[in-house]
Image (cartoon, rainbow, N blue to C red):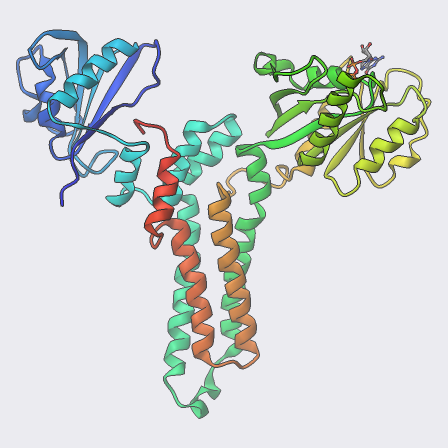
Length: 454
Ligand code: GDP
């Protein structure tokens, strides 16, 4: 059944240079033609793909909405793989919305969230990993995140996965050929050779998996908290780290001694950073609420920057905080290094420490490198393929453990049929990752997170 023609405003709603109304489907160009009058007088339906026309966007009664440019793309050479028309009007909600209403009146249906990209997937223009790359491009919060997302959109993940899948299928087919022979003829089977092939696939997957943690620190960000007793310099450190991006520092509703949160880029790590109230014993009930929240933040954050004032000896409050750091990914920030050092740092043994002066900014670069190291982004080098999300990661993990099992089954003399079943499991997980064999519900889940118009 032919998909019905859909339309949506593809640009953000608000004032801007232009707004684009995208229409995709068999009727895209004829619908656009009813809503657009070219200065040349020529109908859009006569245009070849990759053509533009200047004219007016019009309502069904012929009244003019705005000046406009119409673009025509012909199947399969379009974003969705279908015929696509795009009408660009002046940026602003009213011209765009009037134009969209006109497009609906001419026969288009409203596009659902991510529907254009979903159609590109269904029509084989992109696979799931590439579609997820598109989503990450749109949501990129740093140049490093954009770089990873672009590589995914360009098919680097898909190529790596395909490469591994092909090697797995070759191994399975070779083993299947042997399993057709009676037992005595299997003697010629070179177990070491096939084991080595599986090991290669396992190593390739391991490499992909190893970039996940660092990749997430760049793409999704790391929930992090600055903790410490009062006056050690937590707010000063927060300001130092968020210097460039102060505008997005937001104060959460609550008391003034509440948690302050900001997205802060430390090198290529995106920190979702909370500056918490000073942790100490207090009789002040309002302050206590802040202290409790700070402790909760400490427990729930993936990374802790624990601040200590080294111009004073560490006291009982500091030691209690050090105790709370056990088992957490954490950096002890030894602050106020511009003053004479009075603290004995032996209680911090075993914890990564960085000496800074939050006030002067001294030590800032070392702290950023430490954050990149602990968040594993330092391990990602330019050109690495990076998995984008939990879905891709869990498919890769499933595939890898099936390969590990297949390899040990092969070497322990289990029937070849059983080995090929395990290889099939691995292949299925990889095909799910790229979307070549993903269930309808997985596909639905992915595209529903897109915005309307993409
Ligand atoms: P918080 O209560 O932990 O958030 O601490 P603040 O950031 O408000 O800082 C407490 C006091 O320490 C302020 O007077 C800061 O100016 C001072 N302070 C913070 N960092 C430094 C530092 O690196 N060196 C010095 N000398 N003073 C600092």
